[in-house]
Image (cartoon, rainbow, N blue to C red):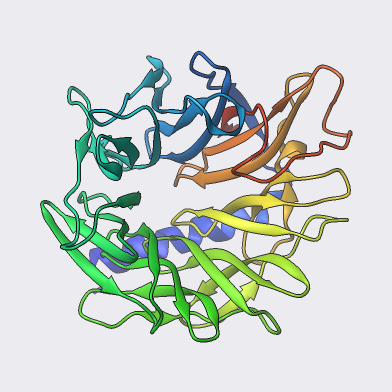
Length: 352
C-alpha cells in the first residue's frame, strides 16, 4: 500500500515532468508590486498564497524599510526594531510569518514579524552581539546567523550549527524537515553546506575546477541551489544527494549566474549574465536556462527583469528589474549586482 508521503512525492514528480515538457510554452502575467516612498525596492521571497517580502528605500540602500506585500493590501512598511532606521525582510512562510534583519539601539539583529504585531528581536547566541535571519519554514523554525556562526531558532531556543572547521558560517534557508543550507569557511575557502538535525555540517563541494561555493535555498525534497565560483567566474548550481552538484549554465553571451530560489517541483529561479546584461532566469531539470523576460508576453514597455529570488509551488515568481522608457527587453541593461543594482522595481509573475 502506498502511504500518504509516497503519494505526495509521486504527485510532485508527475507535476515536475509535466512542467518540464511544457516549459518552453509557459508564460506569465506580471504585477508591479510598487515601492515605498523613496522609490526603489528589492524582493526576497514569496509564499504559497502569493504574499511577498523584501525591502524598499533609496537606490544602494539608504532609508531602507522591510516590506510585506499582499494583492489586497499592497506594500506595507514593517518599520524597525527600537532605535533602528534600517530593516530588510528576507523570508515568509505560508502562515504569513516574516523574518529579516533590522538595526536597533544595540546593532544589527534578526527579527520576526506577524500580522498585528511589531518586529520582535530574536535571541542571540551567548557571547555574541549581532544576528541576521534569512529563512523560515512552515513550522516557524528560522535560519540565520548569530555572531559568526550559522544558527537555527526554534521558539526562544537558538542552536549553534557550528562551522566546517573555519571561524565563520551563515545559514540561508531551512526546509520543512529542519534541514539547513548556507555557506561556511574551510581551510580551502568558503563552501556551501548542508546541516540536518542530529548530524554534523556537511560540505557540498564546488563545481569542477572552482574554489568556493554558497548555498541559497533548499526545498522539501532536499534539493539545493546556489552558486559555485572559480577562475571561470560564478555559475549557478543544482545539488541533490543522489547526483551531487551540477551546473545550471548561463544565458547566451553571459559569464555569470546564480540560483536563488527553488520550489518543491524542482523549478529554479535566479540571475544570469547575458549578451544584454543581467537577466532573471527560470530553469527546470532537463531543460536549458530560460530568460524570464521572454516568458512575459505583456511585459510593460521599458521593463527589464534582471533577477528572480523565489518561486512557490504554484509557479509564482518574485523578480526585480528596472523601468526605463528608453529600453526594452531587447536592449542591454547595465546593472551592478543583485544587492547594488541602482533604482529597481519588484514584480510578481503568475503562470497563465
